[in-house]
Each structure stands twice: as C-alpha cells, then as structure tokens.
Image (cartoon, rainbow over all chains, first blue to last red; front, top):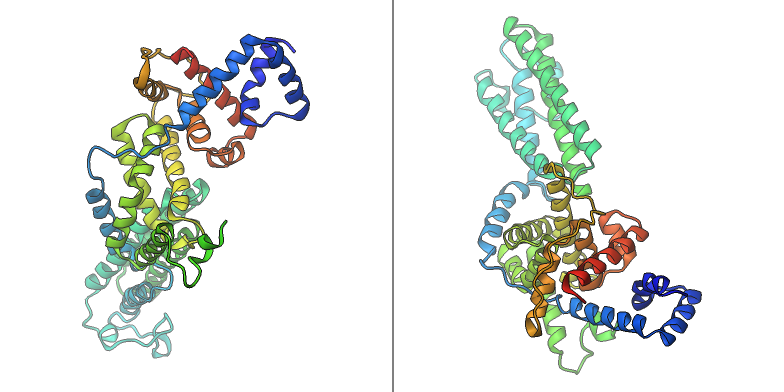
Length: 219
Length: 195
C-alpha cells in the first residue's frame, strides 16, 4: 500500500468503517510508516476537537417572545383544526348550512322537500326570507379565508405536486364561482343558477376541508 | 436501556435527578400537547441552547441561526401531537432542527443566483492560526466559511454524531455522497487550520 492509498482510507479507518481486508493492510502500512502515523494522529486530534464543538450556545437575545407570539397567533386559528376538535365541523357546518340554505331559500324559492340541501334541518333564521344574502356570503368568505390561511401555512409541508394540484383546483372553483355569480347578476331569478352557486360554494368548502385533513396527516 | 429509564425508579427507591427531570419533561409535554404555551416555554428553555447551537453551526451566521431556532420551536409546536414520548423530547426535537436548517439552506440556494453546489470545493480563506485555547474558535470560524453541503455533513457526523445512513436520510443523498462530503470537509478544514 502506498502512502497516497493509505491517506485515502484514513477517514474510514478512524471512523471504524473500513472493510476488514483494507483495515489489515492499512494497519500494516501504519506500523511501518511514520509520516502516515503522524497524519492519523493529527486526524484523531482534529476530530476530538470537532466533537467539543457540540455544546449549547445561548442566543444573544431571548427568542421566546417572538416564538410565543407566533404560537398564540397560530393557536387562535389552529384550535379549530386539531384532531378530535368539535369546533371545526360545527363552525364550518354552520357556515356552510347558512350559506347554502340562504341560497336555496332566496325569495320565491323553496328547497325540495322543505329540507336543507345539506341534509340538516333549516334554522328559522336561515329559512326566513329576511336573511340577508350579503351577510351570508360574508360569513362564507370569513370561513373560507380562515381555512385558506391554515392551508397556506401548511402548503410548504406538502409535496410540491399536492400544492400545485391544490392551487389548480382552487383556481378552477373560484373561476366557476365568478362565472356563476356573473350569470346570476344578469338573471337574478334563475333557480338553476342559484342552485349552481350554492353547489359551487359547497364544493369549495368541501375541498378545503378535505385538503386540511390531508395536510394535517402530511405534516 | 436501563430499566430505570424505561419505567422510572423501582418502588422503595428514591428517584434519581434524571428520573425527576424526565418525569417533569413528560408532564410539560403533556400539558403543551393540551395547548399550554407556558408548559411549552419550559421545554423551550430546556432545549434552546442545544437547538441554537446546532442552527449556528449549520447556518454559520448568528442572526440567521436565531431565526432558524424560532422556526424550529414553532414547527415542533405544530407537530407536538405526533410526539409519543418514546424518547426524550430533545431526541425528538433534534431532527426537526436539522430539517428546518436544511430546508432553509435549500430555499436560500434556490433564491440566490449564485450556485453553491454541495460538492463545491472552492478554496476558502484560511483563518489565522492561533495557538492555545483560541484554536477552537479557529475551527468554528473555518466551519463558517466551508461550503454549505460539506459543512452540513461535517456538523452532523463529526460534531453531532449522526451516522452516514442517517445523514443520507436527512439530507436526501446516498451514503457514499455523505462520506465523500465528509472527506472533503475534513480535508478543507485541516488545510485551513494547518493541521
């Protein structure tokens, strides 16, 4: 074995990762070569020093206040989405039922069979014709924005193809919503368009919920 | 692992300081998992030195390391539900810290137009060699100017004690690549320090 070959194997040798045959050969070489023994000692000394770098370091400023602020900010939103939390289904079901019911129960409209399209029972407020459509949609926007905020925070943990697919699906649904809304503005009494708007709102909520559950499994 | 580490001190014997520390940590973890930010602060205080130390060695910049350490504790809070208490909290926390620092490194490399490939072996300025106790600072400084990939592998293997296959899983490279990076890092550092 030449010195050049020996020095190439030195890292694995000191790490104890050398194959038996190479190990024996290198041992023989080191026994007879002072220069390579010196290199071996120097490497071991260097590694011993490197190991002493593993020590605690205190940051120059207390990092906790900034961390705490971020935790509390997340907690406000995320408490709805912790596994097992009843708040998420309740809050979203309420928002979804309100929106969909209002859309179905607009003046001169009657929900088929007198029941909510979501399968639940219509509340008096939702079934009443006095319910303000703008207020219902504002509630919907608030709910979906909360969901989007959570989802966007988790997107960085999603596989890139999942995140891309999420963006594409959301873009498609938003485009559909815009189209239906424009059509409804032109023909406000069209029951088919009204149902389509309700259905598209529901699809967006369903998609967001599905993706949030998926992202909680990923992260 | 010793029985006392698995199940606490046997009946009739006083708990060791280690047992007490673990019991306290388990309690704090449970409280934090239930949403207690105050309990999580205690876990932070117990572990920030180690996490910040790793971030500093990996990032080579104190300001960046502070940001990274914050990210680590926020990320750990988000994932706290997945901690089952089968290991010490610090053992669970450490890979999160490694991943956060490596993710930032990857993101930074994507952002910068200058390519700093993991096999970048560009020579770097030799820090001034000093004798005596200041030598350790020389090694820290030399580490800071090491190419990112080589520094990451060196820190994980030679400082933190990870095995090559573990580094390969963390960084997403083959074991052979990790070994090659380590060899290069050691060579560059020893040359820079004149050892």
